[in-house]
Image (cartoon, rainbow over the protein chains, first blue to last red):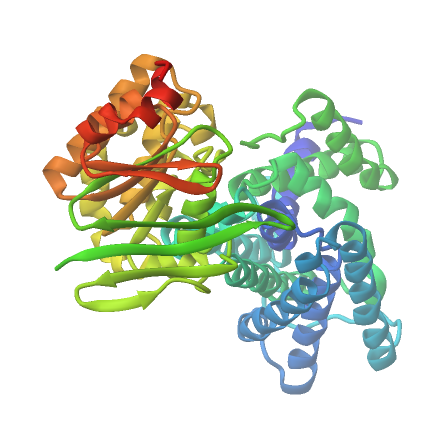
Length: 290
Length: 245
């Protein structure tokens, strides 16, 4: 049954959901979209970030977003280490295509199993003043637990976008997968550039994880549910386009929300792949692909 | 303030194939030196050795910058660029999915060039007005001539003391080759650039070269001390000008 009240509510809820999806996809947009590294472990790092936000909240009562911000530099360092290993073990020997994929698959399971051993498979959630609040604008409800993550996500996008567009290392990250030797002829070290880029991508997972656990309770294996969505978003936005990722995430969030409101929630997971298939048929380079 | 490049007895190749059999040359401050030879004689390989892209099996490559002598053999390409030597590579090697301006800005990645970014950008846009008009266009969507200009401008963004140019004429219409050569001469005359240019188009290269070398089968067949000496040389006539001996 269609009413405009339902429609506007679904639209707003979808945009907020899309804003959150953007946060989860941003890291992959850098590591896969810019650096050409098929990091399927990205959602696992997001879950790890969510558990760290949970620990900070459970043990010391820290705000999850604050914990995410503090954890981000640590995740950056983890990302640098993971890339370093990936480079020495696979990329340097041109083995990255299949073995690299298996490597990230393994990383994903290791993260998941460690979390299961530490916390079991029960769902965990956090406490924060903005969880449970609701604003009413006319007949449209805006839950603060969706609104706050969406705003944090957009701020994170703005920061990363500015970094990539305005700094020398940031611009080198945009160039490194296009021509490695040419980048060396600009006096840049491609390995170091990719290392910074990968660290940055994993760093965003700390914050995205905090946003995830604000929105919904989690358990260690839910990361796998997001693999399809985040890859769909990054490809739909156009590989190599950070702003395309944000737009694609918003489109997917709105589409999922509309479908789930008017056709039932069981259809929502099909939306990501339908949108992706249509996009690939009509515009294979993605919405903002160069 | 002077730069001098000296290459001595360099032997190099790829795998078991040896391309250079002991070549020597030198380039002094303010000169434009042409490295002449037809395809497959080792011009590009020699430039790659200087840049650290190909490691010579033997021989010396030194550069003397303001009295300080630096051994270039064994340095990575980025370390050679950091020391003030820029390369306009064969095939241009632009970043096709970045804009003209982003390509140029990356050219200033070198530590010594970062502070000069806006000055150098203004200089490149003045020298190549078409790049200013197309600053927001993706490099990969431009014509061959425009891409070659961008490749030269990008190398200039690093404020090189010595510029190596590999085959600027390849893939360009004859009219564009003349313009490109004229532009390199203008840059050299007005800004005191030191240039080593590998080129197979003898007639164009000789227009701007102060002197030149002819490389045949990986050996220096001739070192001409002036453009005229090269033009009058029998070997050159035989190889390039189609004149029977």
